[in-house]
Image (cartoon, rainbow, N blue to C red):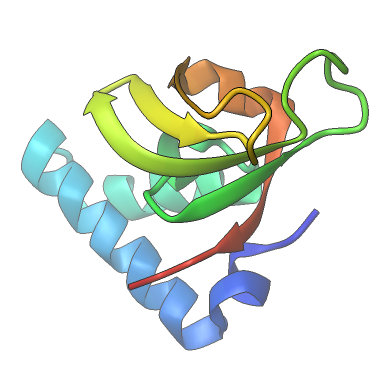
Length: 112
């Protein structure tokens, strides 16, 4: 499984984690140390609730349901737990619940 540091580089991965932690401090009123610990744990566990971001490409895990699309490209947040994703042309763009990403692994990130 690809690590965040492999995708972004060590420095950029650390910046992204710090930014994600700041979001948790602002949105959920966590203290900074707790927020960073949650982000670090989420990254280590490949938790989509922490990792999911626009521009990411997620690939289906080998043990996942083979009827799921092989690849998802995250294009928009529709709510706090639903995303729009393109699936490489099989069905086009669709809505996926965030927990669906547990059947996938973060493979690539197109950052802008």
